[in-house]
Every structure is written in C-alpha cells, then in structure tokens.
Length: 439
Ligand code: B12
Image (cartoon, rainbow, N blue to C red; front, side, top):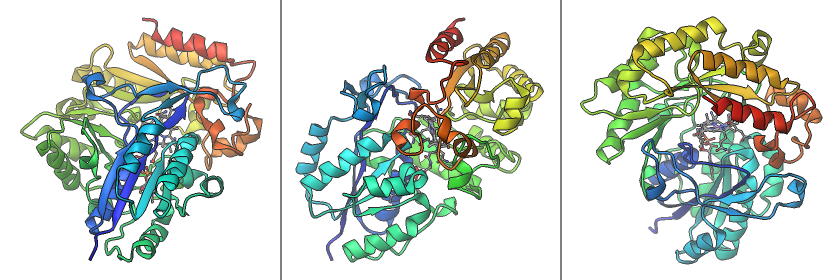
C-alpha cells in the first residue's frame, strides 16, 4: 500500500522586529511525529531556519530578513515592516521540486503572524492544487472564527482542542486511519517532536508540562489548557538522552510554570539532569516564577546546567502585581535573587521581565521596576504587553486600544504598542528601553 505523504510547513513571518530567541515550531513537530508514528511519510520545510554561521554560543541567531511595504492596515505605523525567514520564491522552488504531498500542514504560531501563513497556504495551493491543506496552531486556537474566514483557501482549520477532527480528516483525505491519535493531555505517550526533520538541531525545546497553575490576566494559557498536564521525570530525561545521542547539547524549557509544585516535578527532574554523565546547557526564555526559587532550587538550576536564569518581576507596584496574577511580591523576589546569587549566578546571568504598556499603565511604574532591578544588580528585560484574545485583560480593554485588536489579529502585535496613551507614549517606551540597557 502506498505510504501517504505529508508536508509540514512553518511559514515565514511579517513583523517589525524578530530574532530567533530559541524559537521552534514545536506544535507542528509534535503533529509531524504523531503522523510518522502512524506510518505516514513526513517532510518539513521550516521557513524560519537559521544558518549556523550566525548562531551565538547560546543557540540564538538572527533570522534572514527583507524590508517589505506595509499592508493598508499598517500604513500609518512609523516602524519598518520586514519579512523574516525564507523568501516566497525559495519556498515556491522547494515546493515545485517535490512530489505533490497528500496533505500539507501549516502552523501559525503568534496570532499576528497569520499573514505569512496565509501567503504560504496560497502558494502551496498554487503549486500543488490537489493536495489537502490543513492549518493549525495558536492563531486558529485563539482566533477561531477569524482564522476560518482568512484561511478559506485551506481545506481544514483546527484549534488545539480539535485534534480529533484533524485525525478524522487525515483518514478521509488519505484513506489511512491513524491508529494512534493522542491529545495533549497525556504528554508521556507522545513521540518526541520531529526535530530530526530540521536541517540542524541547534537546541531542543523541552515541554515538561502544558498549562499553568496560575491565571494571569494577560495570558491565554489557561484558556488553551484549562487543566495542567505534566510529564514524568523519566520521560523528560529519556528525551534529553535521545537528543544528546544525536549531538544536541542545548535544551530550552518551554513550560509556563516549570517550578510549580517543584518537589514533585522540577526538583526531581533537575536532580536527574544534574546526575547525567555529561553536561547540558539549559535556557528558559519564558520566565521562571521567582516565588518558587529557594536555595535548593537555585543550586539545582546551576548543577543541572541553566547557564543563566530569567525570572518574572512584571511590576513593583503591589496593586499591579495583584491585578495581573499575584505571582510574586518584593520579598519573595528578593529571596529568589539572593538564592540565585548564593548558588553562583553573577552579573548579567539573572534577567527579570518587566511588563510595559499595560492598559492605563503610567511609564513611571516601569522606570521604578527598572531602578529596583538595577539596585539588585539584576538585568531588566522589558516585555511589551500583548493583547491576547480569551484573556481577562483583552476582554476588558479590547475596545480602548489604539487599533481594532479584536477585529484583526494583525493589531495584536506588541510592537504596535496598542495601549499607548498620554501617560505612556511611544517616546516614553523608547526612553525606557534605553534606560533599561544603561549600566
Ligand atoms: C514557548 C513559548 C514562547 C517561546 C518560543 C515560541 C516559539 N514557538 O517560537 C518564546 C519565549 C520565544 C516566546 C516568545 C513570545 N511569546 Co510565547 N509562548 C510560548 C508558549 C509558552 C508555548 C508555545 C508552545 O510551544 N506550546 C506547545 C505546543 C505543543 O503547542 P502549540 O504550538 O499550540 O501546538 C499545538 C496545536 O496548536 C497544534 N498545532 C500547531 N501547529 C499545527 C499545525 C497543524 C496543521 C495542526 C493540525 C495542528 C497544529 O499542535 C499542538 C498540539 O495540540 C505559549 C503558551 C502555550 N502554552 O502554548 C506562549 C505564547 C504562544 N506566547 C505568547 C506571547 C505573547 C509571546 C511574546 C509576544 C511575549 C512578549 N511579550 O514578549 C513573545 C513574542 C515572540 C516573538 N515575537 O518571537 C502568547 C501568544 C500571543 C499571540 N498573540 O499569539 C502565548 C499563547 C502565551 C500567552 N501569554 O498567552 N514564546
């Protein structure tokens, strides 16, 4: 029997700024691995792959980029729009050079990156008119109706909760019934994501859990994953061994609340990693919750291979801290910094995220947070607020943004500073970014 062919595509993106900050199309690579387990032949085109010469020792790297004209919706914006990743002509040539796939899978990671995904769907449709095209990812998950309309050229659009429909569709389209049809609630039974389909594997993201114990008002994780699912320690360690055997040395924790309930999850896991007969480098672009960092955790972070640590501060205003999620207080934050210092993290190795551009936030609040971090000798990192559908902050303030954030996800890009106001202007933000960088 002929083996059905699947092509997975991670599209190029349009944005005002983008850097490969340990990003990877992890969801798509999980789906690719699941289909492979079911006997499908799977190929990948990662339009966001980065050339190895440009990679920093920590694994990050700049994307290829080209200036592009702005679409009408963004005409008034002062910043330069760029396409990041593989140019469409190159993608076209790759598609033309391959046998028509039975199914083409396209992901869309950030909601406001859907424009690249739409172009890729159109291009794939032109080159392979008979292939079935399925779109999934965070955009269809968070903007279900919008995505169905915009991806009218696709055969199926699925949210992360609709994997059952997807498996059914795969069977209808190929005649092969996938016998193994997992959902994302038992992470231990999932095959390892298909990173081996990528040209290089500069790092491997580790998803040791999905969902979050907290309900921060700006974040959509609890909407997407209402119950938290965690992997067993053995499963994560086995995955590290698997990739290490294939030459991978860098691992990147993608979890939303890695340290929650750490005596049952992170601590035993980090102990096992620390005990491996080889060192690994671990990074955490998503903040760790400072409230859970005591001396024991800090020592385990060092011994397991965290080369630096990113923690969340968000704000120094107690009212704001309570309003956004109540995860950390000044006292707990300082305890975490003290523990990390004692464990050996020096200057520049502890970074803390501060939220900027929240609805109604005055710019001075952000400067106070920067000053606070500087006094602790912690590197401030400004995280500009992104309005995300299905979050309490989005629902409350969607109509008062400078752009119609609910009507078109293109406006959900934090680079547009949707909640600029006279108490916090674009100039204030530029000033704060420079101020944060000053020693
Ligand atoms: C890890 C992570 C990051 C990483 C890397 C992201 C990446 N992949 O490149 C880093 C730290 C870089 C990052 C950065 C940011 N992130 Co982030 N990130 C995440 C996080 C925690 C996990 C993403 C993930 O891998 N999930 C696990 C995989 C398995 O899930 P998935 O991708 O959804 O895939 C599933 C399905 O969608 C489906 N699927 C996926 N593709 C396809 C395709 C097909 C065809 C099919 C059938 C199915 C399918 O399969 C999977 C299984 O169900 C999510 C929250 C979350 N829990 O998902 C936020 C999230 C995506 N990030 C978010 C935000 C806001 C940001 C930032 C803007 C934060 C900031 N203010 O700076 C930046 C911007 C990044 C940029 N410009 O590059 C938002 C989304 C915002 C938006 N508008 O879309 C999220 C949802 C978190 C939140 N706060 O609510 N992020």
